[in-house]
Image (cartoon, rainbow, N blue to C red; front, side, top):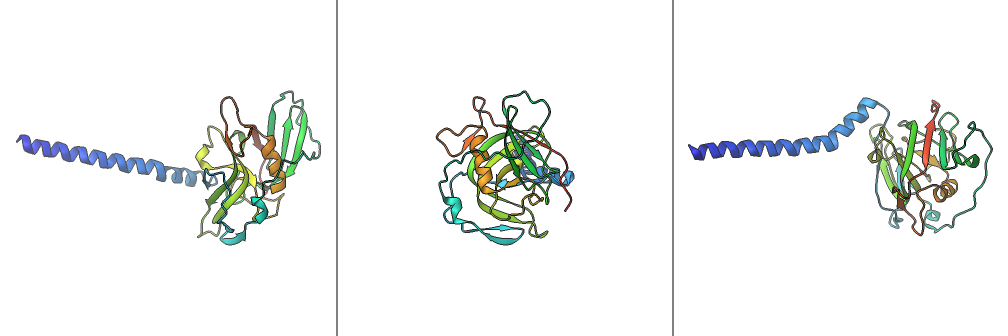
Length: 244
């Protein structure tokens, strides 16, 4: 009788372990997909944490079509001085800290340090997935990264090695694993119009300037994580993306 009871206990334990494994897989894979579908517009952008240039990658894929990766992306470009843009006013700004504003309606990015506008650039925000609005922080800066996502069935698939000067951002509602960021672009030149899956696309020569200006500070590194002592710059995204 004791032997039979032991078998029953063993089978019960085995079922609990199997159920636990299944639940872990469900939470890790299925739940994020369901959240994406329920939201309807927020998508998950997959990315790698590597920051080195992939010398074996010569092309990427954007909207199911192959695109060439410019050889100039591999150059060790020096930081260029700021190119000041048009001046705009956001009221009486007294905070001396760096801030980045992204106006979805105008498809523009503005960078401020105190009351001084440092940059004013055209961008491309979400078309095949919306760019989230709100206040965010840069949590990591990667000199290069691999990005992928979209759907082959819908014609929105992308696989893009060596995306340059990426600054990923997040807040309590948009976690880090969703992969939203500001980054360079070599697969289109249609800035000023929505062209992304949710990220903020910029010209490579302009995002390079923003990358070296924004926090966290790089020091002698080319990529860096934000820390409590070296926090990321605040990003404020507002407005409504034009329907095109």
